[in-house]
Image (cartoon, rainbow, N blue to C red; front, side, top):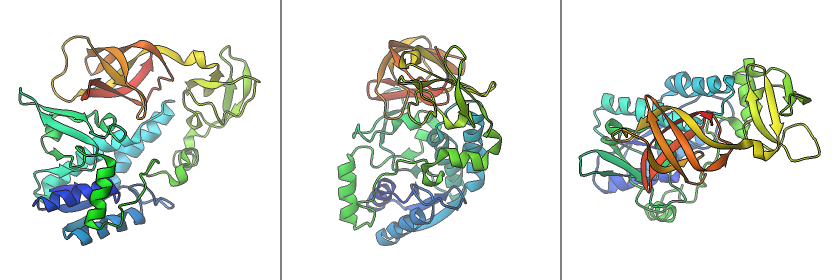
Length: 349
């Protein structure tokens, strides 16, 4: 069993539970970046050391797998390209797609392991028709199905999620029982490869072509101020706009071609639906439109909607209008607790 170990409590407990159950475990810490100042979340020396210490305490083998080249070619490249297109990317989703359930599965093949395991809070189950299905984690407050909407049958057949059936409190209790030093380690809330959570500084340094002076305008085109790159803004943003009109303003539009940021009142963010691209389905693709729920941001609410599949994409009509439907972010499709699939928001309707 090749277990992805980030150095956090969830993946550490996942590895220990599998080892306790009798599996031959190789804990594998994925080194994703070689960047100065990165030492939080699942990246950096601290995470490596924590993962190695857990393996030593539990008594299973451990390795550091350098996947930084693949990460740069896929996740980082997509991160930069999406910002160039004026979109707000979700690098955690791309990392799960291309690294944790892509390159990591390839590594399992190379090392002779049939299965991989992670510390994600999701549950998989086999349906009566023989297909694998993916459900939200038991702990709804920690559920991570949204960032795994791209998983399909081949990945699920070879993946285990040992903590998906338990709550975060139970996971920490297991960590204490195993005597792990990460039992009280806080959850990471940052993008792992961005030092100090300063996205603007990171992008300015590593994608300097994004730094371009442009106009901040009102919806009618009147100039309100200037910016030095649309990458510093996202739809729905209210703080740090750099302009003052005496009213509460939000980013309501980004035009990377004209290099323009549009701000205006919140009601201009209201949308009836969206179109999605890069859509995939966990099991069989639906053949016709259906009623379900969608989630358009990680910690957002489920929204009742009609979902209409299309070739490689989908169209979604919300039952009630939603604010700040952001191109580049993910949309996940649900039927109750079951994750049906998802994709990338291409446009708001």
